[in-house]
Image (cartoon, rainbow, N blue to C red; front, side, top):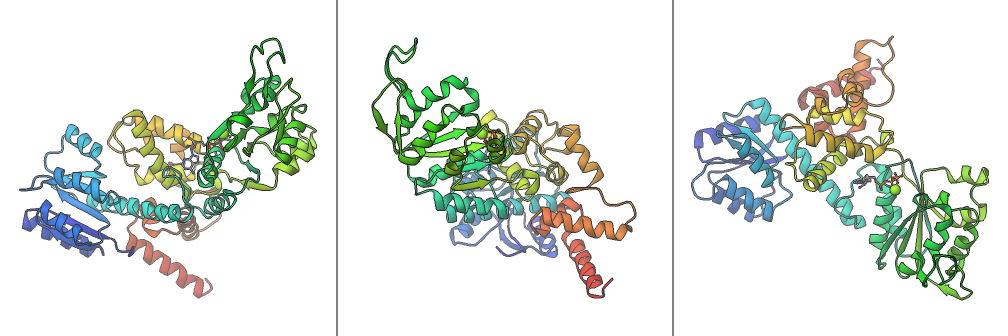
Length: 454
Ligand SMILES: Nc1ncnc2c1ncn2[C@@H]1O[C@H](COP(=O)(O)OP(=O)(O)OP(=O)(O)O)[C@@H](O)[C@H]1O
Ligand SMILES: [Mg+2]
């Protein structure tokens, strides 16, 4: 996609259309024009590459609503911004439900237009980046990860998927261990995904849940029972919180990992299963071994392929895309209209430390989506400890040192925001609250100063 972005303006009033086109071109965007919904469809049909559609609502023939329906059906990746003079709350909600990315009340105000177009272009870019990654590694549609770290993890996941090698996944709570486990399973071609949370069971039940039992093995064992290794015989067995497997059960798990053999509790018959084990824990397994809570031989056996998922605060570039994806997912789940995040909101989310990682981000967005007062999710819709970050404007770790000149603080802040957006200047400019040409100028000045050794 060219950096400029290509905008299709659909408006039946010639004067208004020419004006919009002139404004957008002056901002550096490439434009297409259509005087009706039908002309727009014809243009798209010809294969014109469009990044955003900006459309009037009331038009003769195929009107804005009709065009929106065709676009969501045939070109779902292209965001659709509606302009309408009759923007009631009801019609706005209806349009957003119908798939519009954004709506602008007429007469269109230029700053609002610019923000809407930028957000829409950003959405296109994120969607396309993800689509590329997804094609490369075969990821499910709702998994997000644009950071270098996550891309590497997904590539490892895809590489180990076809074998039956055990995989150990570690990382803080809520970082996406189960998501990665499911991605491996998804790419493996195995039958079923069976999960056991070892921390959710009383220790004495872990073994019978895993390996099953024979009738009469204990008081309540009134009939034979297959364990999860049998349920997942050609599938994937996900052992969550594997550090909680009791020491007495660990040798049996090790045996199973080594040769696929196990016995149901109380049964002398050896059985076999092809289940592939993926184990996860939010503890440090080496520490568990040192503390005597995990057998070292089990640890070595599990540790053949070890995927470490970094906490969200170490990969802030994932936050904007994750937030967008989670808002979509949550809106669908709770039957709410989807809502855009303001640039300040995105900046505040990217700056927060997220001790609860993606699960915490999900909760914060669910709350914001349910309680928001306006059409967009603003900083006021965030819990105060997260919104506060926006007020200080600091992205990343520590606040700037009090002895720095203003210019240096600005320089460092710009570099941090660029880093947080993965070098995306459009997004960075939006977070910084300046337009792209101002950012370009500042970057040029910074390069100039660096070249002069200043
Ligand atoms: N890459 C991702 N893209 C989209 N959503 C994600 C991603 N990673 C995690 N999530 C979401 O975040 C939430 C937590 O993920 P998950 O359950 O996999 O974390 P976990 O590491 O297993 O957490 P815990 O240690 O608490 O078990 C889930 O709702 C999941 O859908
Ligand atoms: Mg989990």
